[in-house]
Picture 1 (cartoon, rainbow over the protein chains, first blue to last red):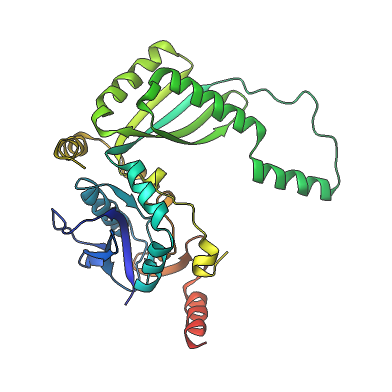
Picture 2 (spheres, rainbow over the protein chains, first blue to last red; picture 1 turned 45 degrees about the vertical axis):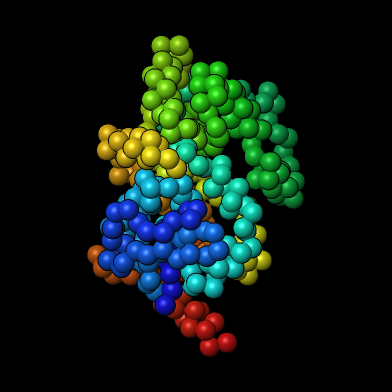
Length: 236
Length: 72
């Protein structure tokens, strides 16, 4: 029997609120060293609308109780895989839990009216080899313009939100006149209201920036641990 | 997490207005990935097997491959 994993958390003995798991399976806590993994016993998990919402509900329920590192929907592994993952990433998990402790994720949808500059001269015509290498470079380093916009937006938001931002991730889409995107902030639980208040002031100060906030969320966007995925499970 | 934080989070969750789409975006696109496999179903018919970050194939092919792996 495989285990469907919802989230990792620090030492958790019991769930404060009983919740039902994916496909109606019971939710239980698997203790591995100092880490608790919230799991259900099941062999397959259909990606149904209902199961996705159940995953979110279980993670949210645990998050209301303790610091949580949510797994992405669909994490199905055997107990040995989970044990070896946790044993192999003990320090990284402890560091991640400490970083996420007493903090929540707040998400911003951004529409930024911003003239994006295009290079004066288009890239000179190149053969397929050069084009391939340029594409690889962009994949590895990111589009230069996107990187510049990310820095600029991050700097604007930090001017307005200051040290309320404990960590930040963003995902931007550029057009010639507009930057659309999502920005994810890790915020202290005690500062959620301050964060909302400062966000509500942004449209008055920056008419070019439309912002919509949602949250608090369990820290899905800050959950990833630097994994040696290939060596862990033999997959690249 | 202390009691005050728990209370704030519980209250915030009760007051929050998060859309279904955002919830699905979080559970499907974010979160820790260590391994995974899901089956995408429509109207109770299994259509696609997805190995997270690994492969996308038909259910039939995936079962075939996994069956072979287990017998090896």
